Amino acid sequence: MTTPLILLPGDEVPSDYLPSSKSNPLKIGSGLRLLSQPSTKSKEPNHVLSATQAGILETDARRNTISLLSFPNRRYIPTTNDLIIAQVHHSSADFFHCMITPHTAQALLGQLSFEGATKKTRPMLKQGDIVYARVLSVGIGAGAEVELTCVNPATGKANPGGLGPLNGGMVFDLSTGMAARLLHASSSSADDDEPVDGLVVLSELGKKLEGFGGFELAVGRNGKVWVDCSNAEENAIKVTIAIGRCLQGTDEHNLNPADQKKLVTRTLRDMKLV
Amino acid sequence: MVGPTASLSNLHRADGSASYKCPVTGYDVLGAVNAPIELPARKDALKPEDATIEVFVKPGKATAGVGERYVERILRTMLEKVILGREKGLPRRGVVITLAAVGGEAAERGDSYITIIPALLHASLLALISAAVPLSMTFTTTLLGVTRSGQIIRDPSPAAAKAVASLHVLSFSSKGHLLLSESQGRFDFETWELVRQQAASICRAVATTGSDGDTDMGEGADGAHVDAFVRETVEDSLHRDYTWKLESA
Image (cartoon, rainbow over all chains, first blue to last red; front, side, top):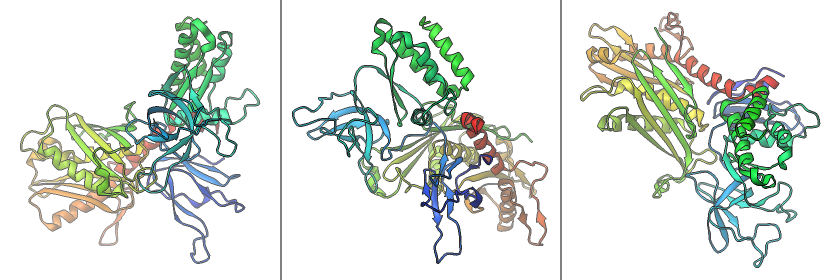
């Protein structure tokens, strides 16, 4: 592992940082743009990439990808296949018009893009309802509409991901960086007790709150997390708030694993849950 | 000489924010950037393939007047060149930059407004970086005053700025282009050329080669070049945000 390289807008990616695998084409993530690529005509043997944002360069040699990790509190920009938590603003004949981030154009969610939905059995979502959806397309060209779906287009099922309306519970705001980190940590299989991405807050909460019937969590890439613990009965509100506070505290103060454990203990004690 | 101080992502609810404080001139600017957001009233139709950039400057103790409108226009024209408005997610959307002068002496009626431009530009650059708005390059800005005796002074204080013969604001990109040149007062071309050379050596760490072939090492005594300061501020902030990643690696 080489030392992390931090780039500023306009910096070129040094050629020795580029993944050298030739088997599959280089995939360029956010924050970088391609200036020239190797071809028979140009003399340049390597890709020339330039940064458009400030961030830490991250490469994956196996999948031949390169991207830039930028500041975690930036605004979410819809990207195809991202899981997000959207709020229904209003509905029209064919679509639910949903909000993803404040002050941006509404995204469209088809009235029939739910698992098993037909004209007769579609979910009746009202203004303010929350859905867990996948970004189906972001359109081509300027100002195109974002389309969401709550089913896997290949299978017609809501899984994987447990898409669909989220009933009950509460939504908390997080930074987009933290949301991406939570999703990444949950997708990479934790076969041992090693914390993934330096996150122990959820496993710690899971251990401590087992007696209250556990909790359900959905993380949206647009910086939202939905928490539901209806199993906790009379303590449901307390447990929900405690989980939200722990996640937001970890995000805001950028806590390390030891401090995350302390925060969980302190929050649960303050809420008289231990 | 005391260098400027800056910090990133101070505001919780803005997409990106930064504060920039220059102890010599006394300006303290807080900048917030929200992007990309939807524009009201079809302003986007004017430039369908590009982002629309809006700049608002607010003085700390008074309402904004013609002076603020004047610097807003200068900032907007310059930032439009640097922001990549055609990158993903930005066309037909707005980039709103709000800058508030939270400290320092308020400019009085008849005072020069160009003295505050370096602080405003640095605050907006850092806030744009913090909001991850795509930029083609970074830039640095400096304020120079030429006294009546022809001496060039760096970052004159508001009191000193009233006494000089001419004031100059110059901005250089990280690749060495001259992006902005605003001047005020009486001066000739030779003076301006001297000012440009000095500004280039303050803004950029790259040694400038003089006409006689000697390498001019710039302001060696000050040590701190402005572009090194910008880079350090951003790197520190990224290190803090990604401690979890860098420690595990």
